[in-house]
Length: 220
Image 1 (cartoon, one colour):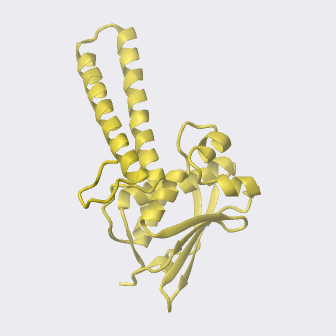
Image 2 (image 1 turned 90 degrees about the vertical axis):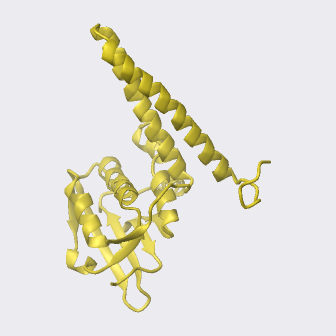
Image 3 (image 1 turned 180 degrees about the horizontal axis):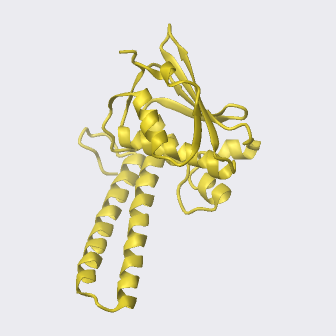
């Protein structure tokens, strides 16, 4: 077994991370040559095939990124951000009908996160509820414990109830995407991996929906 710089054995996560990065390097080369070839193409059929190849390459890059995220091995840049601003910008960029109990409740709450990953994974939760629950109405509510500074954020709709098997497998790679949504993606395991990086528990409770549990937040 190869050793890392600190002389510890590489974990399975390390190995998968290295494989995914190498995989993305090969994809980048393939896609770069395809883009160069497009510049010399004149036949519509060839242009169409090359564009399809590039589209598949982009999907593969996204898949690799999602796979890496699903095991919690992320390249993230953690900083403190306003939760109010994060939620507002995420919601404003969606086409979903989202009801927030009151943004005033989120005022002055800051969380340690990576802004782009947070928005992407939070949106994954919203889109899952909208698509699988067949509803555009999603509720977001907050429960903040002032003394402990712990925070719970609920994302839910009253119309979506999951079976015991669905709850058990919801964050297993591919389950929510392939089995529940019929899509080619790793599913909600990506969000689970990212929030684990934030040291935030992500779970599903019928009647409460997705539950994000923060042990501590900044009230600066």
